[in-house]
Image 1 (spheres, rainbow, N blue to C red):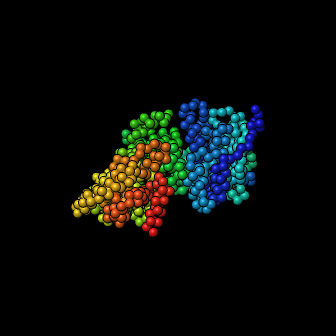
Image 2: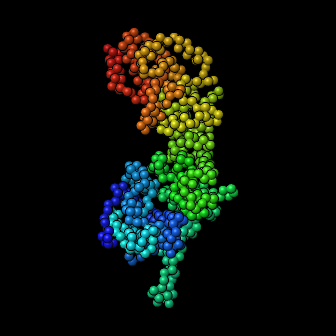
Length: 637
């Protein structure tokens, strides 16, 4: 087949079209980031080639010195960025330059608002990558050859960013990729040596391989006569791995730009920690906390992990063995002197050195968060809003750091103003009543359901603080977080409520007497509700409500049950305990009801109301409405 016969025109993936349109119109205020993104991709391509060459002899061919070259043509209004990295074949080009494979694309597109300023931030979180070229170019040409294929198997990709691109076979002597940007009329300012050098030093100085541009010395008279004088290239950037440099030599701006390079994020990081470890283990680490959560944060299959280098040689992009799952939002680099250059994921999972590094890196992240929580409360509140639910996975996954993670957790409580999760467990313990030996909490589907639960009534009466938990992860969290600072956690909607020394002896005696007095009523209610309840008993949880539902001590809560059922798990039947308030007028009216049919209807209405107040769903809402209407008509007759 001839080279010409291979040419074909293909359409962009729908998401790419939308992203291109929004990016071109939203990122106009910071157009120069296109060069940062393209250089970052070229650097990744060189890193991948260096790693592949460890296992495959001859891959570097006769060109072992990896670099990135940036050139321009002012008259033609073009910029060309070339690397001698791994390159791409035809399948790679179609896959990488025509689709977005990143998970969370649909969620990303749903959150776009049409507001250019807000959308630019969203696009930044998503990462712009290669498509940033169209911010300044109305046509982009890519010529590339993969390192392990022949010269006549190279590929040319061309597009104007509208809806289609062409792919054709070409011949190319050098491996790697060259991207030529045909600049828009209003972007010709970038076809300038000083402008390009300034952008490279601003955004890409930390890239660990040389970024070259043609030397711009003023030519002498003799040199002007030499038309065929060879171009002289010079290195524009520092070309030293940033994490190997001393912290005192690195500016905040350099750290921020390095973060954007490795994460493809548009926003600055919230915090970072740069550390060098020497001794039994030797490694450098540079860890970043992003300012915003990625769109696929709650997808446990998201791309995660640190960039792994061994003796400054790039090994893998997402080494997730160095941090636990609940810290999957952390970005960064780890460079070890103790691992072998041919390390694999299987070896990483079994290497004791990796376990030691994981423990140390986890502690470093938690220390960074602890310091932020103590000294920069407002910033920690922003962090919690973005990543709090993920951090709540920690106590179940990381037993060694359970207490440390627990100190970082934040919850809403009856002391909070509104639904903000702004109360720490340490703060709760410091406010505990004299004689209080438990940390009380309640879980519900929503904050309002928790804040208005009938179960809180006795706690409000006695002035006891209760944590209000409404995140999906909360009930699972509390099943693994049994105590804090020596204080047991107690779910106020589960089992027998024991307030310990906070209970008055007079109240206890009154409850016992009331239970004896209402034995007949309790039996009637149990008979009326039948298999719907496990037990009916007198409550001391309530002061204003007629009744409430209580989960059995060993039963699964309603929140966790719904999550398991939504995941397709068959759950065993669990019946609630029905507690009634004998002092409430409605229960007094119930006790005096002689008509057995009306008694049964009233019992079921009160039971269904207690179910609704607990955030539950009625099995037969129509029957509830029918009974309630019937009773209302009888009362008004």
